[in-house]
Every structure is written in C-alpha cells, then in structure tokens.
Image (cartoon, rainbow, N blue to C red):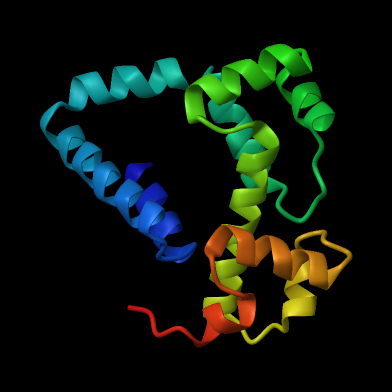
Length: 153
C-alpha cells in the first residue's frame, strides 16, 4: 500500500511538498519490511479510520464536485466533527484536500495525456476552464500550460 501511495504521488507531480512527502513515505515503506508485525497491526487499526476512508472516497470520485455534506454522508459524521477530525489529521480542511487531489490528478493528466486544459477541467468537474486554470496556478505556482511544458524526470 505504501509503494502504491509513493507511486501515485509521483504520478501527481513533482512539487517540493510532494517530493518531501514521498521521501518521508519511502522511509516508512522501508521500515515496514523490518517491522512487519507492527506494520500489519497498524494497517488493521487504520482501516476503520474515517479520515482514511474519506480520502479513499475522494480519490475514487475526482470526477465529481463533492461537497462537505456529501463526504460526511459517506462517513457518517456531522460536518463540524468531520472537519475538525480531518483537519487535525491532515492539517487541511476536507474541501481543500479534495481540491489538492484534483489538481494533483490534473498534473498527472497533463504529464501523461494530450488532453486539452478545457477537457481536463471538464473531466474534473470544473465547468469553467478559466477558474480551473486560476486554481491550478494558485496551487502549483505555474499555469497548466506552463506546467505541461516543464521538463520533468
């Protein structure tokens, strides 16, 4: 699971924050080989974690325009409790986290497809491609067009 997480994050772009996260996750991945019993026990406990489950739900629904209420309905918590728990765990609000996942996936699409920016915008449930471009630029510090032109790897 950690290897998949590292791989998926590499696919989502090479921002400094993303590379730092991957680097730290790699150490966790390597430790899982040495401490197999602890790692398996921890994974069993985490499988009931509402934050982890909501992140999986977000990743599976990047093509939708999810709201906080929709996420809470899936998890079975009130919006205020869920938001507090999510922010305490991740350091971000659920909606901000979901937007980041969408932008990371947009990076993946820009890197691996020839889809136009308007098509990527629509694919990720952003009706206005200009809004999508502004949001992308705000998070990635570069426009989608400039990101696509960047040399990577």
